Amino acid sequence: MTAFSVSEIWRYPVKSMQGERLDAAEVTGNGVQYDRGWAVRDTASGNIRGAKNIAPLMQCAARYLDGTDAGLVPHAQITLPGGDEINTDDGRVHNILSEVLGQKVTLEPLQPAAAEDHYRRRSMDGDGDGDAAEPERRRRLGLLDDEPFSDFSTDRPRVLSALAVFRDYNTAPGTYFDAFALHVMTEASLRYLAGLLPEAQIDVRRFRPNILLADDGDLAAPVEFDWLDQVLSIGDVRINVEWETVRCVMTTREHADLPRASQIMRTLVRNTKQNLGIYADVGTPGLISVGDVAAVG
Image (cartoon, rainbow, N blue to C red; front, side):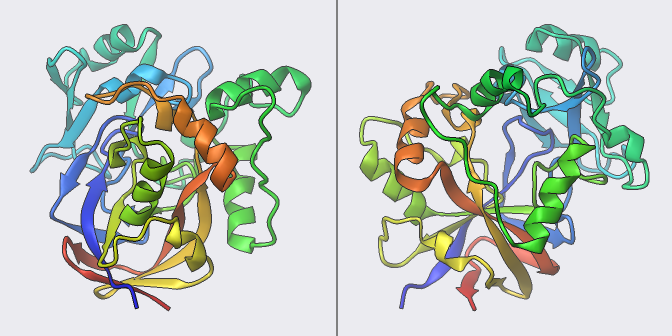
């Protein structure tokens, strides 16, 4: 039987920016503590946005500043594409980020779930269901004109509930997540994709998981797809595996030292219905560390 263990833990202080790699992390009901604690709001549309809409976000990186307080989360230090740094409590941060990103934005910390208006969708801005919205949806997902959209039909109640949120909100109130609290991947999935695309630079940073799991068998397959509806145990933490992770144009973006790689989406569409990795909710919170054994069932 294949044994799995935690090889990497990631947290992303600012939605869609490069994150910070941790040796250990508290996992709360809302995932890795302080994950996606900040996000940018596009001034023109009024909506909270990520790199599907604002690509240069991925050229920035962020890390939390110990001993600081921005309400629900700490303040963070942002490293800009040229190497300059600015803190989230710097009064210039909105203007500087707007200049770097090429559009007017504000940087905003996480708010309580009760502050629903903070998360509310202000305009559809290309997100509607009509024909005019299809080219924009394809752009954000990284799909060609002849490639099918992912099938979001499901009878899983928790998945249906998560998807329903986006009719009225940019993100679920109280979070800046796209869907669920945790994103888990295996090194086996990365090896699988690297085998299909030997010419591409397959790197975990393209896929932005919270937890990356190693195995002792050199597997090369998206084995985590088989864990749907099961419980993943990591130490004392229990994670409920809910859904395959639907991929978008962000996996192909140029960032850090990774070049643009549009062939990743072509390969995922052909081989995994555009999916890689799994989304999960937290059943039992606790501490996880690199090296912890992970078990399914």
